[in-house]
Every structure is written in structure tokens, then in C-alpha cells.
Length: 313
Picture 1 (tube, helix red, strand yellow):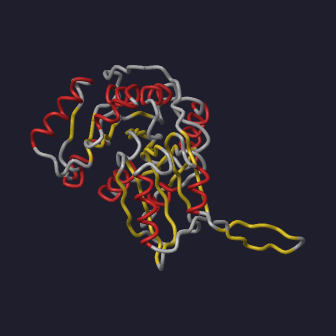
Picture 2 (tube, rainbow, N blue to C red; picture 1 turned 135 degrees about the horizontal axis):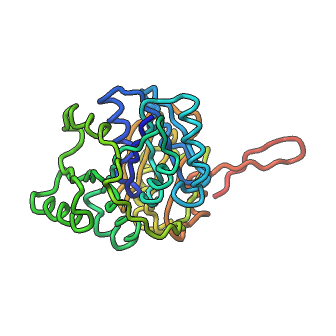
């Protein structure tokens, strides 16, 4: 089993990249998701129109408090389903150096570690460097490949500055500026062929876990797409706290909708029908009561043996 770690800060596009890689190569992939809180939103995205095996660890961060559970899970996956490739997607605020060191401790003839990938949103480099410098630097320092995402509309000068910024932190990194969907099959196979042989020096930093607030809501609802867009506008303007990342899916009007918020921008797309509507918000000073009022307007209240739905405004 070969292990490929794909790191990147919140909203860099890791899940979409993994899904594209699976579609391009059709290999025997198993994906290990380290999600925030009790959320399987990315799992739903990965499983849509695919046959991938997806494992999740949601209680702890695999670079800090969940190290032992992570190592045990890897061994379990190897000993039970034994896929050709295990793709590890850590949380957006995980220390890559710690994850790589943890995997190396359990390597043996049946488990090998490939050179890792870090994905960076080209529009958010400066804000990430300012707010989460230790994580940002750690992920770049310890990566063989650094893939820049969401930079399709940037000019040559801006792209050159991004490449220079990355090489200041890691002179040996291969920086990919062209969108990965334009890459050929040879390029994709290269990502799965480079074994981490010890020549890449691991730079291990402080393992203190970033204490961002997380709020997970299930059974959410909203009347229409107009209401949803209005709500998302309020979120990006800071009405519900400083939210770095939000995502979810819900039934809206007459269809299922998937929404995402990253660094003051939001997107809304369609998604196949899900078993349950849910979402997650990650940030600081979250307005929890406000989010509940908008997304869970109906709460159950029990009177005697009868359950009645009471709407709270």
C-alpha cells in the first residue's frame, strides 16, 4: 500500500483534486479523511459518481491529539482492504511534518510513503501567511510538489511572485501553476511514482493544535435559493463571526444544493440527493445562536406523549 498525503489550508481544493485524480487514473484508491467535528460532507462529495472507499477520523487532528488513532487506522486499512493507494487528506490546519513522521514510524515492506503534495489557494497566500504562518510554512517546507489552485485569472507577474514566495520557503519544491485538470496522464502518474526515500528533510515544528471554533449542524433547511444566497452574503460580511471556512448541503426549493465559503467568497452548486442535510462552520467568535436560527428554524418540543414542532423566530 502506497500512501500519498495531500495537504493544504482550509478551502485550497484538496477534495476536488482527489476526486479528479481518481477520475483521471481509475486506480485502486482508498481515501482517509480527517474532518473537523462530526462532519462527513467531503465524504459525500468524494462518493458522488465514484466507487472509492472513504474512511474518516473526525474526533481529533491526526497531526496532534489523534496520532495513535491515525496510525492504527492506517494499519487497519492495510490489513483489511489493502488498496494499491491510500490518499490521506488531513484537516486544513494540520502540521504536515508531524503526519509524515507518524507514517514513517509504521512503514514496513507492505506500507510505503510517497512524496507529499501541498495545495495552496493562489488568492489567499498573504492572508494565510499572516494568520496561520506556522501551518502555512510547515506545509510548504515538507512538500515535494506545491500545486497552486484558483489562479486561472492571474497574470504572469502574479504567478511569478507566487512561485518566488514558495521557493523562498522551500527552494526544492516543484511548483505547479497550470491548472491540474489540464495535465496529462503522465503527470498524474508521476505523483504516484515518487517514493519518499529519506532525501526530503523533514522540518518538524511545534505540534500545538490550532484551536479554531467548529460548529456542525444537521437537519438544516432554508426556503429557497434566494434565502440561501442572502444568508451566504451575511456570512461573508461577518454577521456570524470570523468564518474562515464553511461548507454543506441541503434541500433548497426543489433541489439539493452544495455550498462552500472560503475567505470571503462563496459558491453554490447542485448535488445528488443526500440522506441528511448538514453543514459545518470553522472560524473564530462564531455566532452560534444566529446560525441555528437561520438553518434550524424547527425544533422539537414534547408535550406529554405527543411530539409537536414549534417554530422559533
